[in-house]
Image 1 (cartoon, rainbow, N blue to C red):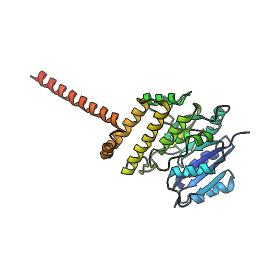
Image 2 (image 1 turned 180 degrees about the vertical axis):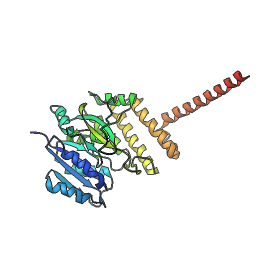
Image 3 (image 1 turned 60 degrees about the horizontal axis):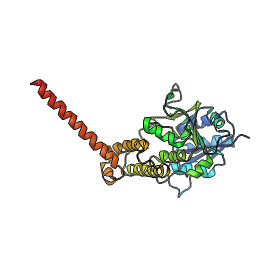
Image 4 (image 1 turned 45 degrees about the vertical axis):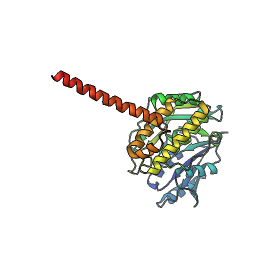
Length: 313
């Protein structure tokens, strides 16, 4: 018997894009799935669009998030998890796309593995479905990892990123790792998948399938640091990640954490420098490196200026 896969789609006012996403679910070569679409009280035609699929295919479930539940994709995904009956979980944002063989290929590689094994796949970006498929082909993290620490060490060296829908995860691993953190307004996906990877036995990369991540759909980028609250939430997410990382690996000079925190540091310093001042202990190493880099830059300028004077005499 093929295991049931629960596909969870949070959505809000995405009727113009949601059909493409649902069509990619309908196109799956793997049949044993349920698709739970959680609407965050959309004011467009989302309900009418989804109901057409619900009427024609019993594998679809549509629910509107009740009053009293915090708004946002994280709480929608958590509600989807509560309603899900599947052995495996496939998260899918309401504007993204699964390759037709995505679930079939990943279920095949996970068959016979522990419930704490996860699968990843290739991915690419797109704007319109009529665009040619353009996948990232040579990412450093396109490989099998026999232990979660190997993955984090590689990210520390080379960087790397998998979008949410590239993963296929056993629900038991999610239950162990914990549901989505509804208190985070940014990097909730990064914090959630960090916990999943932290607790996994291994990561199996499946090179024969892919997912597509839609870009430039509007100027309203929820991931940008437009408010102090978002910037503080970003810091909070990395405080959680760092604490969990240190607790598990006892690695207090992690290239992974240093690399990621440096990126966060410069982003926040550029937009809300006062937050850096209030979190000096957390960003101690980044502040030190930043100061050293500035001093080195000034020293180079002075040396260059002095040499210019000497050779112009």
